[in-house]
Length: 115
Length: 114
Image 1 (cartoon, rainbow over the protein chains, first blue to last red):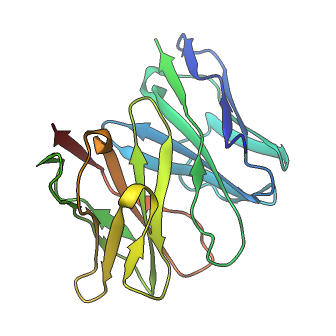
Image 2: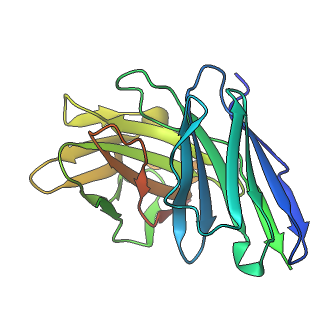
């Protein structure tokens, strides 16, 4: 099993540019989560999907952030325009809907630096 | 609202000694509790969970955790620490409604000295 795959692993961009982060969940998992990790705020849930449908986006910081899941094996998190305060590690995670199987499996993360 | 407290930023223990990483939680209804470990420049790795049943749950790499409902705690333990256990540990909680979002604690850095 390849686990959750994220790309790119590192992204450095200038303020104002568009950034797109990508995620491939574990095959068969029907929940997908996007988190952000910073020293100041720790791990924050941004949004999660069930069967490709956004369920809770209350953690999305502002309209500059958007997320899509066009199919069961792919999701994107887009920031447009990016700002230096968006610098963080962004994690994607997936889980299975079977009762009791509530643990989430995390990808390696994308380290975003906005200069 | 649900929350998790990890009262220690860092725990230091000598190799071979038992270790405990503390976690307390607050949630409406029944809690589902999780421990994750994060190594440098890596994603979070699932260690163990409590959903229901026995209060002592066993997980990966010899770790275990004890659920204590009256104290609202879910401390992570290991009988004999290894240097390779040195990492950042996160406790997480969700309630037993349909909402799948996890709330994470701030993390505890475990340092195991040789």
